[in-house]
Image 1 (cartoon, helix red, strand yellow):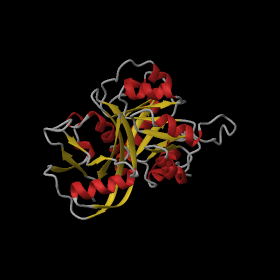
Image 2 (spheres, helix red, strand yellow; image 1 turned 60 degrees about the vertical axis):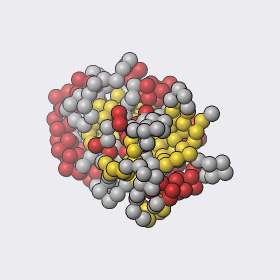
Image 3 (cartoon, helix red, strand yellow; image 1 turned 135 degrees about the vertical axis):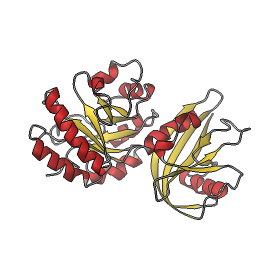
Image 4 (tube, rainbow, N blue to C red; image 1 turned 90 degrees about the vertical axis):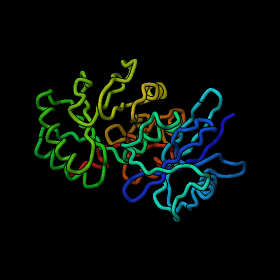
Length: 312
């Protein structure tokens, strides 16, 4: 039997998230968790979340959105965890059941201090909703950097530098210039190289792998920063999950301008595949900014795109 739990990542104005400590006598006792609890029969997930926040913390959620859904088997019990990001609430959180409270930035959270089912939540909290893949004009660095600067004004928090036509020395020059722009805008820059991608570890804020590079791995590489991969089917998504990657891109969700008649997943299949894995997944392919809400309703971390974000 699976226990369905509604949980909240409650954010304050500085981006800190509220966590509570489980009592020592409870399952996974002594670990920190995101507040929430079991959904009762006849309740919707949103109703269960509202009730739990009132009972545990004495607050009322005013604005929330889906963050991630997680399935986990502890051996002695299985849980289905629906986690919402709560960005506005009424009241002052208090540990009404005697539980200690802490406010932490996602970067400060130590996954080992949380139950295993909660650890993908930390990954999701560390990632933005908008993921930019760079455009095709990397051979014109001045124009490219201007467009990158303009694109970041729209708020993408992660940029993948995809410029396969550039040889390594030229790519490195563009990477350094792009990194300066991204750092100034508070965005993370990821390397995407068609050959020996992991050799670039440490030169930016992480690595993005192709599906072929993902398939060649048997364990997660020890690199600093984010590690993600392109996926196109459930098997590749499960590989990303098994290697504990920080995210995956799943495509193509919708028809694209370059391949308007190519087969695509559609939102129903996207939702079904994402629901089978415990890793943040971005929707890629035909995405526009207007698709963000639909993507979130379908279980996505957010949307990844070139055209939707790349400036003129």
